[in-house]
Length: 151
Image 1: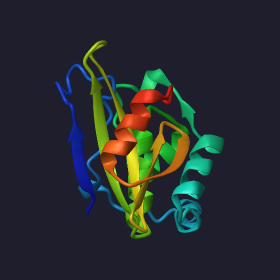
Image 2 (image 1 turned 180 degrees about the horizontal axis):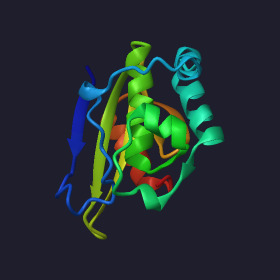
Image 3 (image 1 turned 180 degrees about the vertical axis):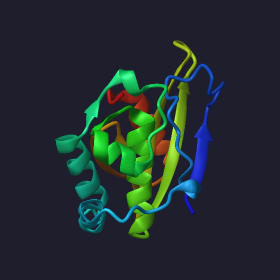
């Protein structure tokens, strides 16, 4: 289904991103409104614009695991929920994407991002933002992420 890359992981227990949903267990609901949204969000830009406009980062969901459908219903979540949602949509539209968990050693915390691969270049989303940097490698994405305040 999705490529799964886990970068610099110390422990999920200490990671700040507790909510990592296993998309292999996701069953598409028969909710027509949800399906229409899924059909429409067919590019990384549309996915991230939708998340930016419709979802809110809420630390109260830090230890709650939300499916893409659950996130769509409650409109609140954390980085793992947003990365799961964007990975699900990318997979649905046959866009290569990578759920990437980054752990920060200095603060014993973690963050999940989605890396998209299209036409041989990479872009990524962090929380609700989209970074179309046309990177030529995943390492370039990680370096860009490390140098910005996008978490």
